[in-house]
Length: 406
Image 1: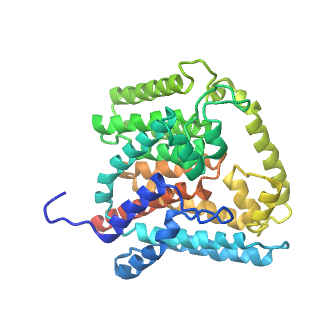
Image 2: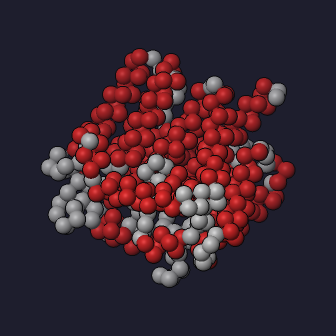
Image 3: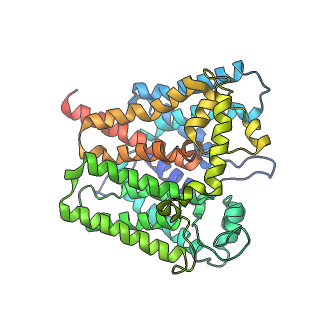
């Protein structure tokens, strides 16, 4: 850091918030009350800093979208034909919080934040490797304090309790979410301007993704590579492309070797290659749930059923597709608003036609692709990372416009 250069208060809080959200467990008050996420704990400070720095906030039309969505969710609750629980109203709070968080993160000095991201990443790597190699006490801590539950209890075991492939759970409490977390870091460290330090961090992030054995994240990485190959083929030289593809293949084989205890057990992700994933119990269960929810979407196609969380709790349903979930809850109008959440910044960044915005486009593609078989936006840590990427992207866009004199 240059002499005399200071870090502003939003940046300090942003660094603390990222560390707390990704490395520390949510705060549990009692077994009968949901755990409190660190964004909720810091929300009063976030609101205060937004108020104190109101004149520095660079507004755009996009900032209105989360607040519009909050109002619309309230409308769907009013018009729904079934009983409403208190938990449904938290969906309004969630969208208001997202809007406030987007305003706050736009105040961050991202040039300073960038300096702390490698250290945060390496800390997460250490925690995850301690978990992967079952360091004494770490998995019990993750199970009890980080909502690891059955994922930790059956870590490295099959449903019968016999030794099996390891799927790294980490601090996220779920291997799929943990894989998405490290996919974010692989995008952050993508060597746009190729250098070996950045490339090393990129490969390390990919190794962590593959250790999670998440089929969704593997599909996401393939989608990102295809996008780069089609639209940004000239980003790297042929030799650099071969280095990246070769590094990706080697990290996958390394992670596969470690996760399967040197190929003693069948890899969870290998079902993508032989096509058996389509016939697995988890995929069949998804298809059955999607068919049920699809029929119910037709009953209330415009405004949907509202949040109606009790329906999912009572029937033990997991949508595992955010597009279907949004259409079921909020109808076609809500689904359109949800898609606009991604489409608006995607168009803005693609129109810029500069390599600086490639990571932000990749983040949106990550969210769009993973939403096909998961609910990334409803996971609090992934929502935070997506919001951070959006704020960073819009600040970069506004800086580019200012530089051009627009």
